[in-house]
Amino acid sequence: MDFYLGLLQIIGVHTLLGLSAYIVLLTGQVSMAQAGFYAIGAYVAAMCTAMFGFHILPAIIVAGLVTAAIACVVGFPALRVKGLMLVVATLAFGEMVRLFFFNLTWQVERGGGLIGPNGAEGFRAIRFFPENGWEIWHVTGFIWIVVAVVMGALWWIDNTRAGAVLRAVGHDETAAQSIGLNLTAVKVGAMTLGGLIAGMGGGIYAHTVTHIEHAVFGVLLATFAIAYPILGGLGSVFGTLIAVIFIQGFLVEGLRFIGDWRSLLFGALIVLAMNFRPTGLLGERMPRLFKRRGADKLELKEAE
Amino acid sequence: MDYFFFIDLIQSTVDGLLFGTTYALIGIGFTLIFGVMRKLNLAYGAAALAGTYIGLVIYLMFDAHPALVFLASAIGSGAIGLIVYLCCFRFTPSDYPMASLLASVGMLLFIDEVVIHASHGLPYPYPSVFRDAIIEVGDVWVRGDLLFVFFMCVVAMAVLFWLLYRTPLGLATRAVSQQPRAAQLCGIDVTRVNMMTFGIAGILGGVAGAMTAAAVGVLSPVIAMGLTVKGLIVVVIGGLGSIPGAIIGGLLVGAAENIFLLLRGVTERDIYVMLLLFIFLTLRPGGLFGNAQTRD
Image (cartoon, rainbow over all chains, first blue to last red; front, side, top):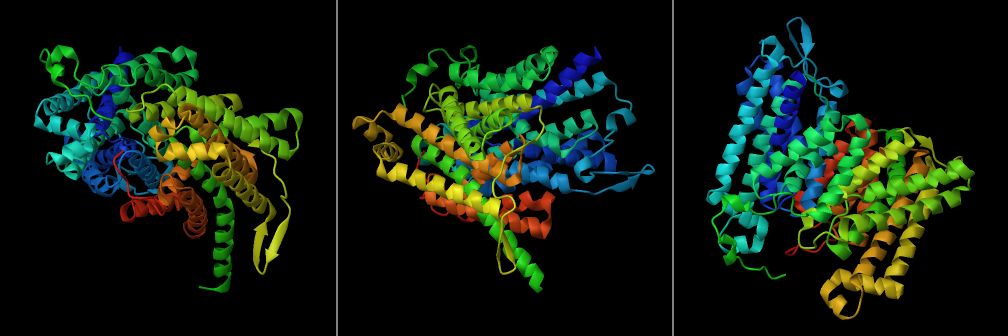
């Protein structure tokens, strides 16, 4: 039973990671910086609880806000470029964050030992949950409450004007600009929100594994982050959730018996999926079930 | 600032400039593909690495001459480039760039894992030439193997320029990169040009991979990520789609990297290279030689 609860925890934190990329992808930007934001969230939240004795909830909120602020600051220069250049810029940012934590050593004395990030060795002993007597199902429940809140908020955003604005920018920037949308504000806003979610996800992640190090937050994690929403489809938040359940639940855990070959399978699966279903599992638009009938009859074909 | 520090600085810069030509080659590969297809092929560095491993297999199995090993690396990488094109770009929709981008990322992971599996993640020795030769210019030493790397990369670039500007294939390639639709109307087979571009870019990548391995002396899977990230940085600094930009960018990154290595040490080196990239993005988003970005 504990195994499945642990798996649910992994799925939960990865869903947050995927959702953070989802909101940025809605504006048509591919950000490889999500692993970097996740790392910032993880280190900040771990510092808050392990070094300064915060409770987990404020720690995660602080982590989310700090990450959101950094995402906002990074967003301005990074979003001056678009499309493919942004991929490079965010990839470089993610690597920069990883290397920063690789070089960061800052330890304080607490409870008779040194605690804090220690360079290449990473940040050990983030023991908020065991120290406060949280059972594994408490932790799992806590994670899924956060996931549910975030998913609900994104679902709500999707169905309001803000969602339409995000999708308008993602679909055609020039058209969006011509109806008076402020592209920079929309993109930086999406990036900030993505940073907030990634920071919270990273904060929770740090506490579930108790030991974080720079190597975890590499390009592979950034790839996972953008792969979830794209594989699942940008139609709705559930695409991301389904993709995370499939990849983490089936591909990583379910196929554990084939050993290391799984990572081979992951790459091959992405290639196959993009060839056969390029817009993802649920497609680019909302699934029909949730839509007014005949809504897409009014749609215009975009001229190339 | 004493004399020896100054000599060290010049020494680092010279080494960096010589080695920077491999970055320039990788950058040219990215730029070529982007110029023709308007798409980013993130699997490119991994394909270059896999090609280099093909050369290594020939070296280990037949104990072949280094020249043959380098040739096999280049051709192998070209072939893998074609496979990448067929798997990631040929059949994905052209108006939905995310699909091909993610497919190439998938391919990057796939190739990387295949190489790690095949080599068990261990580094292998890679043949080099002129290892012991050193040319002394005053107090600055120029390593023979680095000079060879530099020379090979310059030759590869010269061949590329000849291909692009003196052959019908080059004319077709440039036509497609300027106006794909008009090129198609003139009877150019765009798919064929795309394939050739991937092949040529792959060969350049193979040369770059082989030269990187020859300069380092060992080949290990970790250089794939380095090649990819550095290549992308070079392209951004030089301007996407510009070949002279990629060359200048490659030399600049090579030199900057070595200077930061001297000043700040190996663990912090890459941070400063990334910072350099960010400065360029902020101050000159189009790159050194890039034209203003139009609607894409």
